[in-house]
Image 1 (tube, helix red, strand yellow):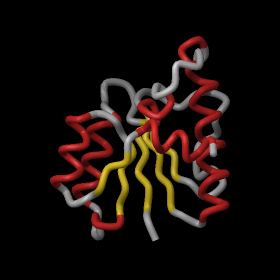
Image 2 (image 1 turned 60 degrees about the vertical axis):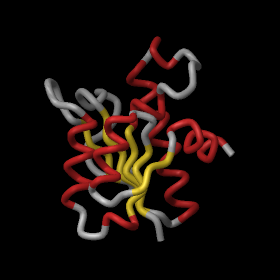
Image 3 (image 1 turned 45 degrees about the vertical axis):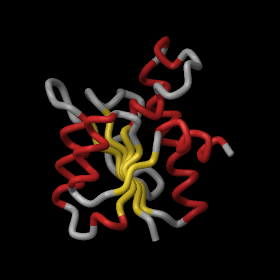
Image 4 (image 1 turned 180 degrees about the horizontal axis):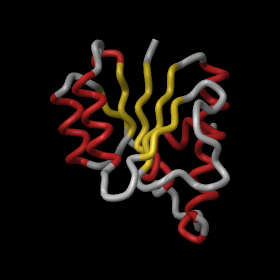
Length: 125
């Protein structure tokens, strides 16, 4: 079974739906959609965001998915690459991003890459 490691802001930014007017709401909405997808598919999902956790998103697991915030001054890309490099079974890891530099880093670690737009369509479908 595939495991997903998602570049959260990259997925949010894959569709110009006005998310930038309320970044925190977009983060909360993506977490909910990912949790719904993980619960229906049974797949393991970790999502990593730049910045800090929105105030209206509780810490801890969210309906079976892992939510990580890189924090101030840190990069979600670096956290995703670190996790891919440290993964004991990177061949089963699918990293969701459309960032070419990050894609190259996780492929070098043995993970596969799925584009953010196609993943977003999967979530919406």
